[in-house]
Length: 225
Image (cartoon, rainbow, N blue to C red; front, side, top):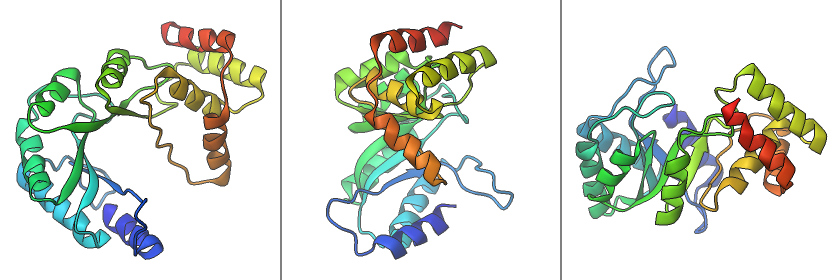
């Protein structure tokens, strides 16, 4: 869970260099079974921020992302009490910037009436394009868009189409999926997780590929398949 992760980060990187930005997420807790149940009552969020400050050995968290919604889709409804709780901590100087995760357009708009929002972290990829309007809107507003699940929710037909393009380009499917995201919009910020060197290579390769227009057209058509 975040505790262990924070301890590893602190051990590896403390004292932190000036150019290092640590981004934390609040709104869920790891339980004994390894699940992540919601923990997003305002008092729980305040507790999690203080917990992160303590375990990371920081006086201020650079960016805190408020995690709402389900596993991969937003749940409509007001998020004002949560954003207000974090905005108060920001006013106290404990948080630098606020981000949102798994939110819809109404929730982003509501949050922005309370405090500036620097990033939105939602489920989005070449096959799952429900957030197309959100990507464009955040780009226009100068807000970073951070897609998660770069290969999540593909049908077999969509998978086959991605594989065909990747094979033709001589790249891995993950590299191509990440390259598509980067070319989709200038505000795209990738956080591809990795537990293997091979994955890391694919992540790095994705950043270096410029997809030719015929490949882009094929990939753009995947969502409709």
